[in-house]
Image (tube, rainbow, N blue to C red; front, top):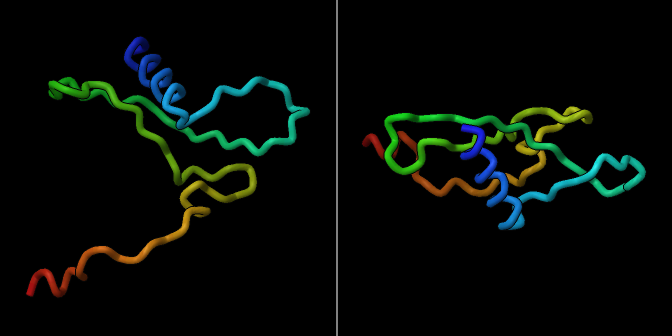
Length: 84
């Protein structure tokens, strides 16, 4: 599990989806830590291990990543129309 998790995180960094930061607190650059955990599905033949990110977890300012994202238009018909 550790090896699969490490490989995923390394690939994520190589793709530019995240950056490693040092412990230097003098840097005024904004940072956001997105909590995540590993999910293992033994019955899967392709992706046994995946990493799940928690965008609804609130940060120190009381907002989550999900709170700051723009909400787009609904792309599907409403359920009532679908059922009819």
